[in-house]
Amino acid sequence: MVDRADILICGGGIIGLTIAGKLLKKGYENIVILEKEEEIGKHASGRNSGVLHAGIYYSRDSLKAKLCLKGNRMMKDYCGRKNIPVFETGKVIVAKNERETSVLNELYKRALNNGAKVELIDNKRLKSIEPFARTLKYALFSPDTAVVDPQKILNSIEEELTGSGKVKILKGSELREIRSSREVVTNRGNIRFDLFVNAAGAFSDRIAHIFSTGLNYKILPFKGTYRKLAKEKSHLVKSNIYPVPDVRNPFLGVHFTRTVNGTVYVGPTAIPALGREHYEFLKGIDKELFEIVYREGVLFLQNPGFRNVAISEPKKYFSRYFFNEVKDMLDNLKIEDIQPSNKVGIRPQLVDWKKKELVMDFVVLKHETSIHILNAVSPAFTSSMAFAEFVVEKHLS
Ligand SMILES: Cc1cc2nc3c(=O)[nH]c(=O)nc-3n(C[C@H](O)[C@H](O)[C@H](O)COP(=O)(O)OP(=O)(O)OC[C@H]3O[C@@H](n4cnc5c(N)ncnc54)[C@H](O)[C@@H]3O)c2cc1C
Image (cartoon, rainbow, N blue to C red; front, side, top):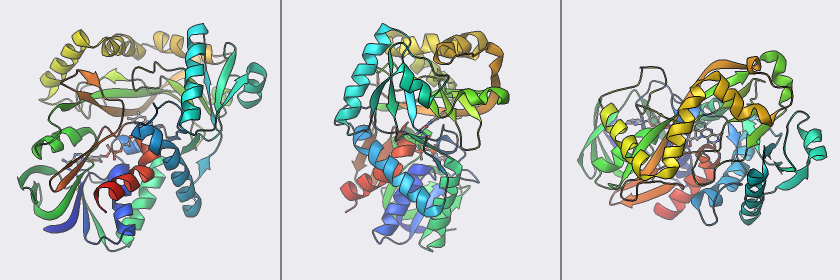
């Protein structure tokens, strides 16, 4: 067991791994990553849609706007160098009514402000890209959106880091508490460090709190379930077909994504979950349940946006309701074409508890000898390489 690190990172998801990679490039040595699971990719980084987003939705001056597009390019370059497949098919956002059409215009402006390449396309052009997609007047086309296999990328970065001889990934090692501002306690013994990086995903608020920072933030877990198109109907989707989202909340809406292996997933939902790892019916619910339900109850009463999500999203457990949500996006879609799937992820959404608001942007806090990455929600997989560069340049140079 290791008992000292120059830099100690908690969390071996895409954020922890890419930060370690950037530190390595900067010449740091003796970097240690704590990962509580026996394998990497067990949580958000290995359970997402694999979409490399292209800077469309995010408000100007946000970290998401600054890092998404750059991260998209860096991830594509990385995959190119490592021979990891990237499915460069773009994506369309379709509108089903006048209200959504005006939001589409808003998204178009936001995307241009963020430097993203987008086009408003008419139905004829839409059909040449996605022959079965349906929209009211026009759709938004993003040619730079792509799809990757996230686990392949995680495995490749892991191999590179451990191969350097300067990074150790301690699997099955869970950070439990801190002994001082330079020493943590894990299930496998204590580790001293010069600098600590919290990249613990769904547990990042808890880790920040034990370092006495970010005390007004709490994570609420949302369950992202997926269904899939029947194999014989997968030709209906060539790339990514997204709905117009409600831009007041951070979720993009249930969409169609053709993965690198050809399966077309439909999802994810954003259903308030009962635990940070509540992937299955009862599995993943622990003693925090009552606290989570309390937080959800308070937000339900005080935050109309959350109330909307809490009322509409759980209905997506029902096939008929789920189908109604997506049926207008594709021609020839029948309820039986959408089949169950066991793909599911948890979206650990940060809440500013003082304001009772869902936090829209990524959050980075520096506190004494520690840096905390909070709210690394979508598009953090896409943004990760640019995000890591930003964190290291801003806080470690
Ligand atoms: C359903 C879904 C779909 C998504 N789709 C996309 C998409 O298409 N494109 C995109 O860009 N993003 C997407 N995202 C977001 C993206 O997956 C996440 O933003 C990203 O993976 C976050 O990475 P992370 O390293 O912060 O978290 P994680 O991958 O969760 O990694 C955190 C790690 O920390 C470990 N850990 C936690 N606590 C401790 C502890 N105490 N001690 C040791 N280890 C600990 C965990 O085991 C975990 O492995 C999606 C997310 C979900 C859930």
